[in-house]
Each structure stands twice: as C-alpha cells, then as structure tokens.
Figure 1 (tube, rainbow, N blue to C red):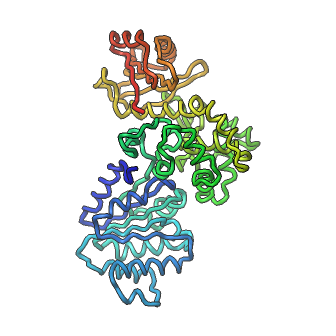
Figure 2 (cartoon, rainbow, N blue to C red):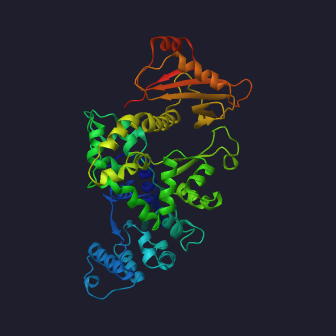
Figure 3 (cartoon, rainbow, N blue to C red):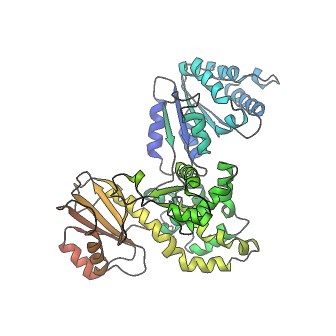
Length: 464
C-alpha cells in the first residue's frame, strides 16, 4: 500500500515557504489519523531538519527531551550532560549551529507543550521575536487537537497571533486520489471502501483491501480487539476530555435527527444549549450544517440540516455503536445482518452523492466545457429533493443531477423525474439547465439513445 498519497498542494506550499529568504512559521493542524506527521516526514526527508514530538509529560520532561533531540542534531556534547537549559538557550544552540544552512524545525503534537505549560506560547513568542524571526529557519508547529491548536496558535488571543507566515488545515484525502492507495491489481470496490474509511490515511492502512467488504468490516472493525473498534471514543476523548454531550449529538444525528429542534427534543435539551456544541463539532469538521444550495443567506436559513461529514464516524455510529452489547460478547451476527441490509442503501448511497459532487466540481461537463461551476450541493423544499444542484458564474446556467448507487441500470423514468423536480428550483426565468445522472450500474439503452440526441443530458459513471 502507498505510504504517501496526494498532498501535492500542501507540499508545494511548504516547499515555497522553505525557499523564502526569510524566517518562516507554519501552523499545520487537523484531526488525528489524517496524515500530518507523514506529510512533515515526506517534506523534510531531503532537508536539514529537527523533528520533535511533544508528549503529555511535564514541561520539564518535554524540555529535557527537546534538549536531547537538539544535542543529537548538533552533536553538542554539552547538551548531553545533566544540566537542563531553558527553552531560549536550547533554541539558541540549534540556531547557531550551521547558521548559513536553511533548517526546518518541526514541533509535532505542539498543543501538548501549551497544555503542560500554559505559558509556553508566550515563551515561544519571545523566542520567535528575539531569535527565530532573524534566523535561517522554517518552523512548523503541528498538532492534532484542533480546538487547542487554534487557541494556542491562530486565535487573536494567542501570543503567537500574527507571527505565522502560513497555515495548513489538513483534511481527508479526496476520492479522486483514493485509488493511489492501492496497486492496480486490487479488485476491491473503492467506493464502498471509501464509504467505510473516508479519506483518513491511517484508516485506509488498517482496513484490508479484500473483495468481501463485510468480511473486512467484521475482522477490522466489529472485533473488539481491533484498532478501529473504539477509535471514535478515543478521538472524542482526546479532543474534548469530557465528550459526553458531543458523543450524544453525533449519535443523535446519525440516528436521523438532523434538524436542530429534533436534535434538541431527542436529547431533552434546549436548542440554545446545543448551539455551542454543534458549532464546536462544525469547527472540527466532524459535522456540517447543510442548507439548500440556492439559499442566499445560508447562516440565517431555517432549513438547516446537520450531518456527520466524517465517513468513518458516520459508519461507526450507524453500524457499530448500536450493536456494542452483542459485539462485547463477541457476537457480530446482529451487526452483520443489519450491515448486509442497510450498508449500501443507507450509507454508501449518501457517500456516493458526496463523491459525485466532488467529481462534478473537479471535471465539469463534457458537453458544456465553458460552464464554470462555483458550488455544488443538495437542494430541497417541502415537495422535492435534488441530489446535486451546481451553480455557475452565470446565474442563468444551472446543473441539476441525481446520483444512483443501485443494482440496476438507470432509465428514462429517473431522468423525467429529475426534469419535473428541476422546475421547482428558484432559477431565473430563462435559465439553461444541464442534467447529469450518475449511476454505478450503467444506463438503459433508451436513456443512452436520449443522451446522444440531447446536448443537455449527461450520463456519468465513476470508476470504483
């Protein structure tokens, strides 16, 4: 399996920062398992660099460990003695070692330095202002606890605010790059594999690329000895410390309660009490609040629906957590029965919609090459729902689409239903509509004939 996939945009940015003739301070953050450490290691592999991982040990132990790392990097025998220097003195040794050589200083799990010593961001600010900002260095502050990283490095209240020269918020690998994880001979259904792992490289690494996805799920996720069995519990505990309310919110959304009022009712809490918790989950990219894509003021829209954006979390809350009692006594049968019935219609089909929207924004439409799409999302009102509505630079050019992850070819009836629903869209009177149908089981001959004659009808199948 490929050890490093995609991240070309992030690498280009890092290389650009390294090439600067000034000091550089980059904040790299994102949730766990997303590949931040791998990105750093790939970036520094051909450069003079010091890579240091902070821990939840005391400030003194972290300082001692950092001093030993600097001693090894600089071959400074004095630092290897029992005398413990302060942070400024250690950084001074590092900066003064080969000052004419550009060096990367990568501090991974940076948030733990501020957690064990709340004043550490102020300490680093002083070191940056008085020393590092004038040195031939590129500093990378990397962390996994998103809330804490924002507070310590990016927030206006942080002592480091205004010092950074750039930041990267690392997200999941897109489906378009997903095939690079596997050799060409792999026979798995990549869409279904992606629906389980999402784009988290660590989960892809742990989830076996075997053709029988249910067997893979049973062995890798439903077994209580497996790494992924309790992974969401670990993630939430690390991020929040006391994750009870956040866990309940995710469980409730996964159960189908997506409106704010229904979420509050299901949890027995007031809507005003939930707002800050939902906002935090949104900031961490664990959930999103969707509104019809045509809404002109989405923040004020009363049509908001919450969904879990992380595909693995959505899978876990739907197919693992409800069956924990039987799984704890090593009886996976109930979970597997539910999986075989609902995995594709209740989970993969929604992930497929997300993949199709990504595809449309990336590739556009062959028959309408001049159309430049700005947004693509869902649309609904009380009478109808459309999987994809793509909005272009010209308000009079709109794409409407349906995504079908079903076992039979899509026929003309689906197209005709889509044209009827499209009439309900709030588009300009003389808008030009392009219709796109995505299907993993192909299309009927009649629909293919129709598409050959109609320049506004597009049929697409995404490689699995």
